[in-house]
Length: 73
Image 1 (tube, rainbow, N blue to C red):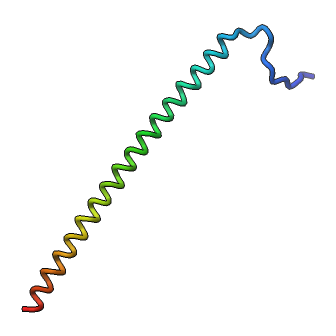
Image 2 (image 1 turned 90 degrees about the vertical axis):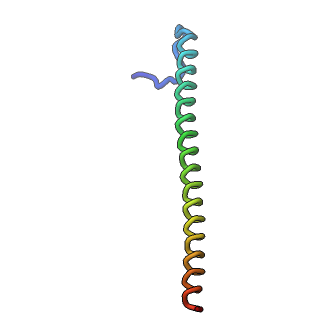
Image 3 (image 1 turned 90 degrees about the horizontal axis):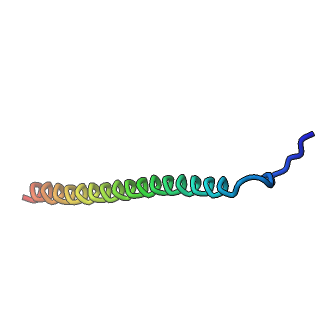
């Protein structure tokens, strides 16, 4: 039977661990940059929607003012 040992073999070079850590860090940096880009895109979308809502609100107020002016003549 093979024992389920999680310890690395004693003759395993240390450089492998360093390379593994470097690869992990690089992958995490890439994931973080993608997440940052998604957050920026979401923030830009939110700002755009707020601007559209503000413009729609102003247009509704102008329309109400215009219709009220026509009715009260």
